Image (cartoon, rainbow, N blue to C red):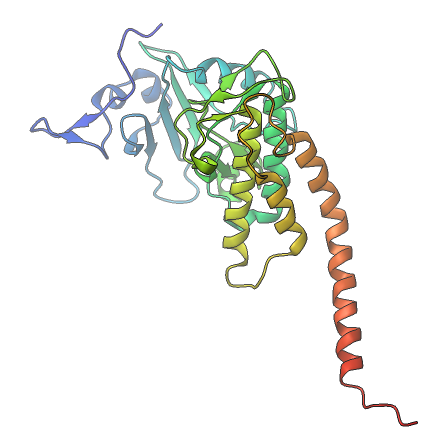
Length: 297
């Protein structure tokens, strides 16, 4: 058990003023980080998450998180890392550093999701489904808590796979005795996604699916911003995930389970190209007939 209060662990300027972008001395002097050659350069989340500086793409970059022992993040990571090689487990491979007086989480620094829209949707629904099968709800699922490994990342970190999508940050996540379809609503923690209609209580598994839908909506808009309108089927699928909130106090019926969401997405992956192909044929047919001169009787 940690003997040091925290997080947050804030850095200070020489004059004693708070330095939100800095790294505290206790991390700069940390023997476990030093022996791994990890020198933190700045804060990603002041007092909690810090990163190293990467001078070139061939150089590995790391993120170090000060774990909050008042949350379930440490035991959840311990569970997930035991089965890290499971294909459905999209937890970012990381190391729990237990040296000195407080546990730290060391992770590779990876890229964002946007260039990988086609890979992201199936991978994230699979990752959420995997957590739910373990009766774990993330509860703060959003773009900021998802990453993807670029080729240069995989070249530097042999624990990650090129183009694989990863889920991070389990500090507000919770473990439950009951699984999807049985767990009743709980009071939501502070989240980055705004709950619909100002609701404060949600089936935790249903909340993850709602957040999944909102993330897909965000990624789809960004991807098609300069291309045109996104496919109708994908828009309807996202509406299905988001659902129409009815304020369920018990098991939520407003949206599908993560398992149903993944299965339908797999079907859409097969059906959507066919529907789009038929649509193009139909458009060509009607265009050609609308420009044909009238038949003389």
